[in-house]
Length: 273
Length: 243
Image 1 (cartoon, rainbow over the protein chains, first blue to last red):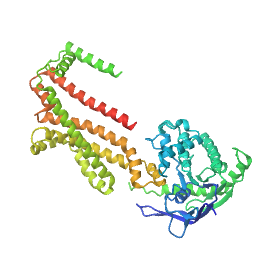
Image 2 (image 1 turned 90 degrees about the horizontal axis):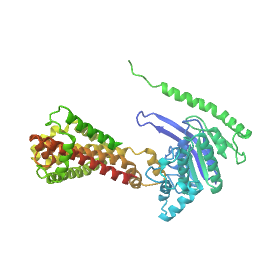
Image 3 (image 1 turned 180 degrees about the vertical axis):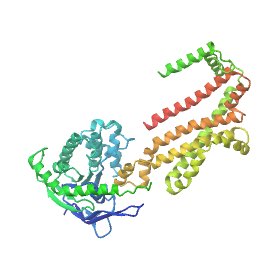
Image 4 (image 1 turned 60 degrees about the horizontal axis):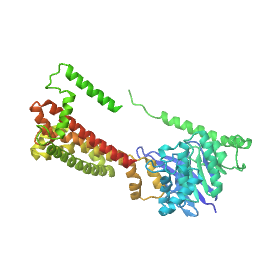
């Protein structure tokens, strides 16, 4: 049985000010199996982040017959025991040290002080940040901060980790390094990862299965299995071919998304002079 | 560096008063003023009951400030918690804030009589607004992602308030308390100078009408010193607390 099942999910967003309805997801169905590394790939505005939020239980989907099941049970709200969620921004609390930030996730799980401390340190060691336990977030670089965020998510020891463009704000070198570390950890701890990105190279470098979205309203265009052997290398001919194939699916959608964004800008009415 | 600047100012002050043609009634030389400061502090002057009056003023400042922070933080919480109340009262608050509250002082005297009370109330009037605004803004303007993270981890609204909202708002609230302190002191001392009865304001007025120029400058310096000391105390508390 797939660990995550999305069936016929749609999402319509209603603007509270103008009342305009925008359909961001249209009848999306997909599934993730255990230990999968599933990539949600698509142009901006296609709803991939929205879908991730729906899976996480942070945002409800339209009540028109679609459903989301995680480990067989319907999703009704956030469940930190089942799913860890990572934002694009590390979101570390500046008033807490690195260690205490990792513990913040654990405090929600009802562990006692000693257990929290123990587990937080264990995972800090896993991401190589044990020496920085008493540092404050402002003393960390972008990559290190995101590592702490990864650590916080891992420490929850959930079966599923959802990541919304976690490396989006980093420089390329950090993205590659953290990507490698993430895959390494994923292979070691055997969790299911759902990863949202708009980067083709990242999708091919990291993912086992890649789901390509169309432009808004988001539908699934194609699902691709990525069987390239790990450890993967940048610039391998197989990877380049796959990137090319993905771009073939994605290019049209990206152009639509860009054109639509421009059209929406132009539709602004300027006041009569 | 800072002390060098202070020293430079003192030297220039001394030089200008000694060598220039300034009327000694208007400006007293730095050395004479500093001498007066010491004499006042050691009780060796014509200043009547210096420590008693200073204590009265300090008492007024402390009372005024305590009321300011309790009232200010409380109202700040109220305005932040309900969008309805906040939106309803914000324009009223802004108008009151914009009025030069010194024109309300005669009204205070009329209602409360002459003495310490109108001074305390005036200090509150000046200081409370910045505390309200800062508290309210600090609580309302917590980074949305901070809240989203806590929500995604399944924390209850109550837990989120204590674990995320309060610590996130703390620096802004503290800034409000610090500014409020400054305004409160200004308010109390100004009130004391306007309708003179007791306290440092009375001592300053006394020195003014008797043309005791050096004493006047000395008292002003002492008052400044109290203000600076208060502020430094704040800074120290803030540093230890906010880390």
